[in-house]
Structures are given as C-alpha cells and as structure tokens.
Amino acid sequence: MSAEPLLEETLIKRSQQKRRTSPLNYKERLFVLTKSSLSYYDGRAEKKFRRGSIQLSCIRCVEVVKDVGGINPCQYKYPFQVVHESNTLYVFTPSQDSRSVWVQRIKEEIRDNREILTKFHPQFWCEGAWLCCRQEEKQAPGCEEYNLFGDASRKPLPPIPAEEDKDGRQRWPILPPEVDDEDGDATDDVVVALYDFPGSESHDLQLVQGGEYIIVERCDVNWYKARNQHGEEGYIPSNYVTEKKSGNLAQFAWYSKHVNRNKAEELLRKEDKEGAFIVRESSTQGTYTVSLYTKSVGGSCRQVEVSRGQTGQVCSLHSRLQLRKLSHPKLVQLYGVCSQQQPIYIITEFMEHGCLLDFLRRRRGSISPASLLSICLDVCEGMRHLESNSFIHRDLVSSHTVSYNFCKSLTVFSKSPSFVVQGARNCLVNDSLVVKVSDFGMARYVLDDQYTSSSGSKFPVKWSPPEVLNFCRHSSKSDVWSYGVLMWEAFTEGRMPFEQNNNREVVTLVTTGHRLSRPKLAPAAVYDIMQLCWQERPEDRPSFSQLCLMICDALESDAALAN
Image (cartoon, rainbow, N blue to C red; front, top):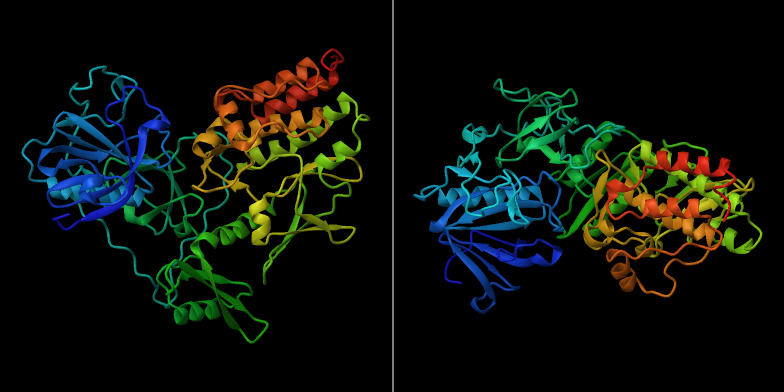
C-alpha cells in the first residue's frame, strides 16, 4: 500500500449483490482506511488480495445502522453503512467502540465532500425492501434527515470525571443490582453508567453511577438517546457508559484498567476487607493482573497474572456468588466457592443418587411413564425459577460428569481447566428421588432474556436449537429446546439423542427441520409437549411456566398418559 493507513481492522462485510440475505452473504475482510480510500482485503493488505475499494470522495453518507428487528445473522452485532455513488456497503464491527471509531473517522475524512446526502435509510435493505420505510426500490430516497455529525454531537463530550475523589480513593462504579425484568424486550440494548452525569441541557438524561439504561437510538457516535427505569428519555454521553454484557470487564466494580501495582495495593489496604481484589491491566501483553488482599499475613497483597482468555473464571466466580442467592427445592443448593488456590472448588448439597442419566439407565424398565413425567416436572420447576430470575442455564442435559462425593452432606465440583473443557451435565437425584437442576457452570444472568456468547464458546450440540448452532444466541427459549431433549432422554430411559450422528451431522439435521422421533414410552400428549419445545422460532416455544402447567395437566389426565 502506498498510503499510510488511518485505521486497520478485521471486520465483516455483507454482500451487496445478492437479493436474499443469509449467513453465507457475510465475509470476513481486513478493512483499511487511508486519506483517499476505504479498501478491504482477503487476509492481507496487499494488492493481489484486495477485494474492493471505495474512494472517500465518492462517499455520500456513513452512519450507524439501526438493527431494530434483530434480524442480523452476522456474528458481529454492530453494523454501519457506507453509501457511495448508488451503492450501500454494510460493515459489521465486533464492538460498539470499534464501530464508533470507524464511523467517526470516516465522517471526519468526508466532511468536505460535495454530495453528502440530505436524507438516508437508517435501517437495512433486506429481502427486496428498506426495513425503515418499506420502500421496494433500492434507489428510493432516504426516509430520515441526515446530518453528517448529528444534532447531539454539536456539543463536545464531557470530560471523564477525575479518577480519584478528594480523599485519594478511586471512584469505582457500583456493581449494578440484580433486576428481575421478565417483561424486558429481548432486543433491548443495555448499558451501565460508569459515572454520574447531571445533564447540562434540557434534552439530556441524568445518569447515576452503576445504573442501567436502555439505548433507544445510536445514531450519533458520541451521544446516545437512552431511557431510564422510569421511562424518561434523553441524551447521554457515550464515554460515561459501558455495555452490559458477559466479558466486558469495565461494567464491574473490581476492574481498574490503568491502576498500577502500588496504587492497587494502597487502595486495597485502605479498604481493609478480607478477599477484596482489583483486576487491572498487566505490563505483560495479553494478560491481566489480579491484586488480592488478605488479612491473614499482616494485610498483604498477592499478585496473580491471568491471560485474557481466563478472565471468564473471574466473571464465573461473580456469577457463582449471584447464583448462591438462588434457592428453590428443585435447584441443587450452592453453599460456597473455595477460590484461594487452584483448582477452584464449588460446594453444593449432597445428591445421593448422582446424575439423572445414570439413574435412568440403572432402573431401565422399572419406571412408569407417570414417574418419568414427574421427573420432567421436577426439572421444569427448577428451570421456571431460573427463568423468573433472569438466568439462562445454557447446558441443560441429564448427565453430570465432574462431581465426586466429599461427605454425606456436601458435593464438591472441581473447576480446573481440564473440567471446563469437558463441560458439566446437570441434573441430579437425591435420596427422596427428587430431581434437581445442578451445576450452573454455563449459566448467565441477563437483563433482556438473551445472551450471545463469544466465538469459540463450547455448548452441548445435541441439545442446542438452531439459533445457538448458527449464531451462538442463548435465551430462556434455547433452554426450553434443551429441556425438550431432556424429556426425550427421560422417556428413552437414558439413550443418547442423535446417537447415530456426529455433531456436524446434528447441526445439519436440526437446521433443516429434522427432530427426534417419539420414544416408545412417551404418550402422544407428552411427545406433543416435546415438539412444542422444538419449534423453529424461539418465540413460538412455550415458557417454563407454561410447560409446568402442561405437564401438571398431563399428570392429572389418565387419557394423556395412555399410549
């Protein structure tokens, strides 16, 4: 390349030629922005690998795309558009920050262009129509006024508050409280306030540190339109909030990006709390340092380095502490976590008969259909409680592989790295033959009933619905699908689902509409419930609350249990 790059990043582009949109239309490309062009390459930024280039002088609009309907099948969820001449290029970035940088920088480079649009289309062109205005002509004029820098960004962003208060202590965001938001829209875009923001103008929305806000509109890269829990709307500065999602450490009170070792130890000694810790950037590239305070040896601090890939263990511990607050007769009770040294141990109530899968196989031929359905009801009641508390399980199957008995009252689970790869399977049976949902190693607390896991995440393929197989998109409705497979396991007395197929074949079968066949022990009414759990669209599946009612009705009906 002859020109010095201003920006360079691997992003995903959508094909501009194909009328119909599918996951096959999305290609990973290396995007390079220079003073004269926006180019994209297949792998390396060399001329022979270049797949397209747009002269900046031809760009008429660059703006964030509102994905209102949540139709985006791309693994990157932050789209923006580049309108050039008579074409529109859709580009998808991995994060909000990445998108903001690209949109803002391109806007700066094209600010003197003569043919900037006066109106644009804020949503996608999809399946032969503009989603924003339903016009079916691709060259139709835009439906929303376009201002190159947006109304809200005419004023500068407020400065980030000082890192320390007057007493010398660092200002940390308060961890957001747990919220039971059963009525939340699955497409809500939620952020957490890092700092207080009083609002300087009438159209601004006040922010309270640690509070959660729904983003209504991201049309401008610096100021967002947001809504608080009282329904009030207004503009908030983008540098005062961070996304609420798994893996985003900035949302947690214990993360301090720019604190050095001496400052971390000083803050922890002032706090003077056993087990207090700070996660901070390490001087070693690709790692974090955890500074941990202990009173046992005169108020000392230990420093532990973890790779960026291991930060999930810290987040997992935080999730475990949240899960410890959950209590229900059909959930295995979590008593505590031993985390002072590796391996980490999780202590739960003791379940005498072990995993449900082994229990079913040991008693094969001796359990009636009514008893099998009662087992399913136990699990359903536990899942209903998780659902009502905004937890997604993500690994609901009948077997458990990494537990061992510690004493007559406790079960201890080791979460060393080797076990994490195996994946725990989680329904256990106690001495009273009550089945309980167990091991929440993959569980996630969510505000909006949806969670998109990072690339490379592991999940049980044979228990997973199409939206997880295709897009790693988890919700309580993906748990419902897995629950349907667990019902199938129960009524086959412990058979492996899709036992003749490998994982790759299962993906093809499920995404093309194939479903598990009716087990011999399952009455027609019970198989109907399973099939409801396996509906293609998540919104067509019942909730766990509805499933509990269906199963209770079936248990009370002699006709429903007749084959």
